[in-house]
Image: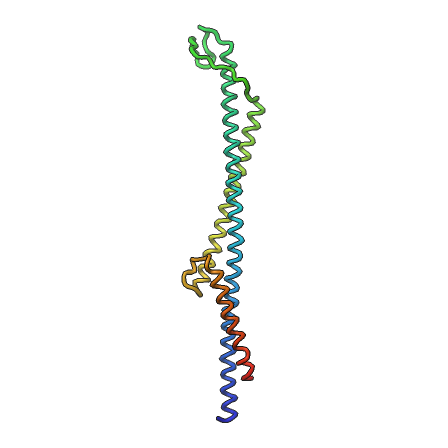
Length: 196
């Protein structure tokens, strides 16, 4: 084989190796893109977990404050009935129902909230409900964001891997493939240089 043929053959090999290296570098870039999406997915999942925990806390606080308000409201109503009943005499018409016989009169509770205390309890319960609703909305928005990026990962990973729905197994597959392509690029470097 003459020198001209060997040079032409070497030139073709250099072009083929260079093209192959570029394809592998493109694959590494693509896989790095998936890797970045997986990191963002993980970050968003943590944000969802935090938002869901906040919602559970806020909802529990709402339930407690609502229960407290309802208990205070019951005490308040009982006190109002007790106030009306304390001066009621047999044969006298009840100002609430009009009955003249009073077999069981409402008693005045030992402790009853004032109008202001009842209003404050209602406001606290309403604020707690609003916080619970806001944190539920926040968790819902963050969960939708996780699902959006999950779908994007599945779409992109589906071009390279079987069963891309297994998001938990993807980081290992992606890193393994990146390592594989980088080693091929590294191995091809001496061959390319020997031909130059």
